[in-house]
Length: 194
Image 1 (spheres, rainbow, N blue to C red):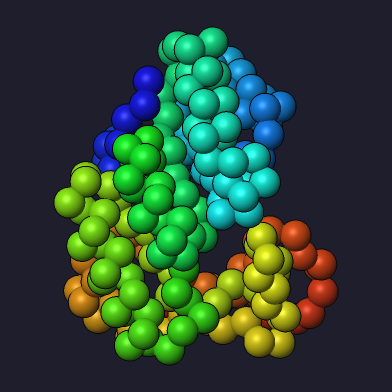
Image 2: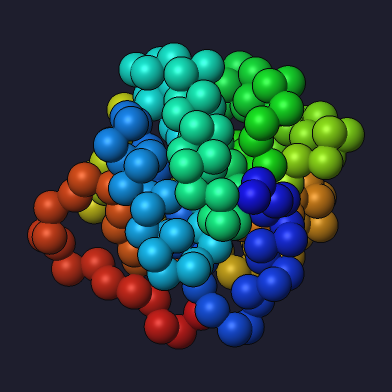
């Protein structure tokens, strides 16, 4: 059953984690739904702009819908991960996505705020939640590469101000983490002080 990302967050908050898994093809979609069905666990199925370009958004969404019929007891949300405006607005207009992410973390603070606020205003009109990003995570995701030496920790002083200015629903921050395809190199680790 497709439910809103916001409902998933409210249900799990302080109790358990929810997997958010990026999918590119049928095997990944079926594997995700089969595992969630087996475990009785809710999850977020994520697509990226690269996946949407590779498989076509219509194909991906139809695979997700078909998997939900094969595994009717699953509880899930659909999220566009690391999007830019053209993918985000298309995802919202498709009426399938329950949340989107605007990744303007490579912009300066004021530009990130302006871009995020524009997406939030548009998404909230359709009941779609918005994740934003503040700070830069190291690693490789889709076609974006951030070398370890250029990765930044999110400035904690900016977080409250950013959320207040943008009204985003969730926020990805950089605390020394790496994600995506990355090498285990460098000395930067988690910032346990913030």
